[in-house]
Image (tube, rainbow, N blue to C red; front, side, top):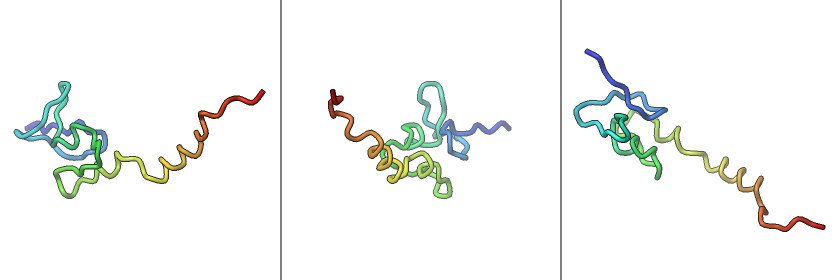
Length: 76
């Protein structure tokens, strides 16, 4: 039997009859299908793909520091 893997990049789950299909790709759950947009965990308790796919808060802060103040005018 050929098991199909979830299309979520960091997920290690297989899809079953309850798979969500989005854009022709099969996902094990709705959280994986939406890319863990709001930090939702994978439906499989031992899978940590939701944690891996979310940016760490410190990375977001560093990116903000590197781009601020982007609206300042160029000095003459």
